Each structure stands twice: as C-alpha cells, then as structure tokens.
Image (cartoon, rainbow, N blue to C red; front, side, top):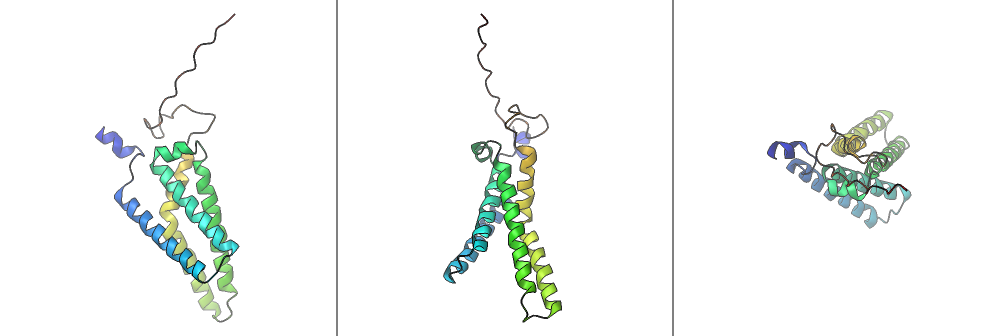
Length: 165
C-alpha cells in the first residue's frame, strides 16, 4: 500500500498545498483591490472564473472524490481556466501597449515580464489541470485504464443478467 499511495493521485504533496494556499491568498488580495477600487469589469469576472476553474481542476487532479463529483467534466474546468487566463493575459498586454506614458522599450519589457510572471505563477495549475485530460475517464469508458491511475477508479458492478424469453 505504501508504494501504491505514492503513485496514486489520492494525496496532495505539501508543496502543492502551500502553493495553492499562496495562490488563493494572492488571488483574494487582487480581487479585494479590484473591489475596493470599484472595478467591476468583465475582465475581473474573467480573471475570477479563470482562477476558480484552475484551482478546481488542480484539486480534481489530486482528489478522486472531486474528480468523480464532476464525472468526466473536470478536465473542462482546466480548459475554461486556461481560456480565461489567455484572455486576461492578452488584455493585460493590450493595456500595457496602449499606455503612452511608457516608452516603447518599457512597454515591451512590461509585457514580456508580465506574461512570463503569469506563466510562472500559474504553471503548476496549468500542469495539473492539463493532466486531467489523461486521468479523467470519458463517459463512454467507465472501466479503469491499466496505465492511468491504476487502482484509483472503483469498478462498477455488472448489471444483472437479462431474462431471455
């Protein structure tokens, strides 16, 4: 059981829990700033949906109970989160390049470093969420795959035999 639990996706490592706690804390701080400045925009909503979706996808990767709660749809939380992250980042780059108070070199530096920071901060969420496409069974294949997450998916009971007239 010891070797099996280290390879199954049933327990989150401490570093992932610390990372998620820091990510959630920073996200809440950022949203608090937006709300304090009364910035109720579509981009704030997109950022919030993206953060929540990526967090749910990461938790679904590590915990079967969460993954099974969404039955095959948990990978789509990642897809929605990644899409929102791309939209939010593209908007930030657009806003950087339209800021005429900065020189062209400063705008390029802020855009490149901003994108790099977004990727760096979100990379664990992106990685774990992308793995859901391999770890999540499709609704058409209920039986577990022997190569993906072996032993974590409970076998469904066979239906009773039908009486043949």
